[in-house]
Length: 338
Image 1: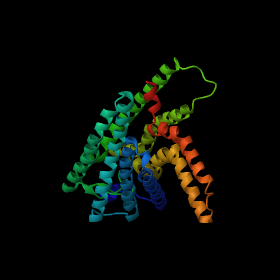
Image 2: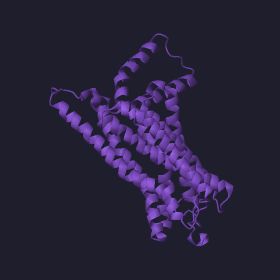
Image 3: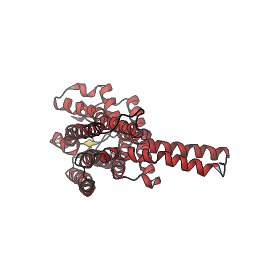
Image 4: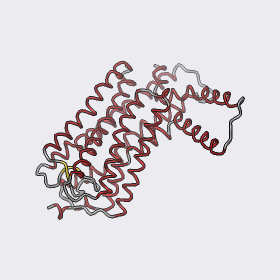
């Protein structure tokens, strides 16, 4: 049975997936490091993002181990890799939705106290539920070699398990489906609230000759609110398509292009988050550029002028002060306007 339904993985597919695993590993590590280094940017949403990055980091490492090892049996290493990837992948779904719920309560319900009180609940659910599911699956001998039926080289639900579809749902797919439904609804509600707040304020604000400085940050926040659910769905949809094709017993699920897209999507979440929340976030981007410039100057042996450096540093911090607050919170301007 395993040999008949086994999906063949080509070297090119493995190389591509390993590449995206490396990018997600680096991206998740960068998010975590920037949070550790710059303590003044430790807002609650970014802390939640760090927890999400931890799960993406674990997913990237475990997926890379699976793709590199090319497991063929239910070995101990296969079960261990499958258990870690199952836990981290499921936890990633929960943390992604948790961030959306936090932003919804904080922005739409205008209650930071309630939003902050939910963080403990987020930890219990986002770590606890995946852990219980994974431990139960391992104890019942459900995790193991799956012949890449709905994976790309890594181990997941054993292909010989008679109730494998049920366990595929419990160990990932049902939470993935719920995230497809929840994320767009929450972010649409948040965007509508922000737009209404700005529209209401514009009735009382005089028309200015130039655009307010905070508007550019609000625009970037608006773009991110649009991209977050779209990127999540675009990355994850390929694994869902292969799962549906498995239910239909269609051989199309073994198509090399579909398998490659599945591998890229499942292993790219950490890299996508890094692009949006590091490189497309002005405060973080500015500090990274400054740090890189300092490193380059040190390598060349160039010492900054003792008189000019403090003033330039202070000027940069003063010019960034309002922008950092606006973009890090994403909605602080809206809260003040209301």
